Image (cartoon, rainbow, N blue to C red; front, side, top):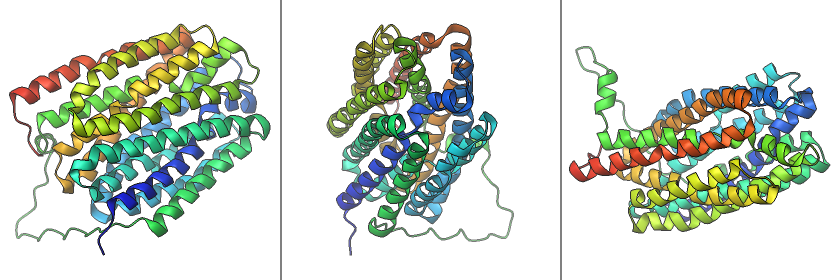
Amino acid sequence: MAISWKRNLYLVWISQLLAMAGFSAITPFIPVFIRDHFGIYDEKVRGAWVSALTFFGMFSFCVSAPLWGMLADRFGRKMMLLRSYYVTALLFPLLYFAPNMIVLIMLRFCVSAFSGTVTAAQTLVVTTTPEENHGFALGMLSTAVWSGNMFGFMAGAMIVNYCGYFWGFAICGIMYLLGGLLVQFFVKEDFVRQPKPLITAGPVKKPGLRGVIHAYSLSVWLMLLLFVLMGLSRRYDEPYLAILVEAIHGTVDTSYYTGIISAGAALGGVISGVVLGRLCDRYSPLKLAYPLIGLSFLFMLWQAFSQNLLSLGVARFGCFMAAGGLEPAFQALLAQMAPPEKRGTLFGIASSLRMTGILLAALSGGFVIYFLGTRAIFVAAALLMLTLLPLLYWSTKYRRQTPAKAS
């Protein structure tokens, strides 16, 4: 029986919606959780701890993502997606019981090493979807992420504000569990494991670093570098939104207003995923990216100078609507460059490099907020977004001059 790629897409979409809703029900409020749970009230010190928490979480994900990508190519994409759902469902609620910041960071490190549902879902969907529909499929998955974030932010704001942090962490685990069960029993994958290569008489020479570099064309590596810069710029300010809300509005109902603003931003991401995912199938993703980067820069800068929550909310909505279209555009182009049997590995590398950018953002962001303050974080994020423009120009120039290789 043939597998329906549309059925798979919709089921994975629902599972991602559930997982992202659970994740977003608690993660935006971690800075407030640190303030209330551990008694760390100083803005700069708390920002440094948030930076450390983000850094070590992203570091473990960055190291493990290529491994999961390679295992997906060997043992199946569905299995890797289930791994990320079930382990996260088990471990994430344990963060609530951390007695101090060191233990909280250690638990976050462990959770991140086994997570990565978005990358696993993208790989599964891409391998079961016709190539001419990759832009649409990836755009749809992007809407699942943003829709889940939107519902999670809104629900989390209510849950944390009225029921406490415990239920925020508990809901996160439950939603990941439901997403895993949905994939396990209803999503189909026609995966055929590749046979092991024949053993030769002589020693097998493994490819070194030079062999890995030459395995892909220059256009692919330029695209992968864009993932680094995108992760660096887009996630530079994200861990510190609650601290900026607190600086603008005060300490009263910080979680509630952070959730509402985050939900509005996620709505912008939903609109972006629906519209730009379709446009990626009709127009060149690189041409779409130019205005998106420019708009993202302007809205990011607007956030930095917002003097009230309404202004901050409008700016964040616009930023996420513009920047939300960059990742599906880059992923669609990357999928066109890679042969089907290598897409899992290449998507794993891309995810790892994007997380490397987030890793660098977390590391440098802690210094920026400690020495320059919260608003400087948002100015730095806007300036980093501008660095995508010259690299995008070079990528376009190279592709015009030299035909891109398939791998």
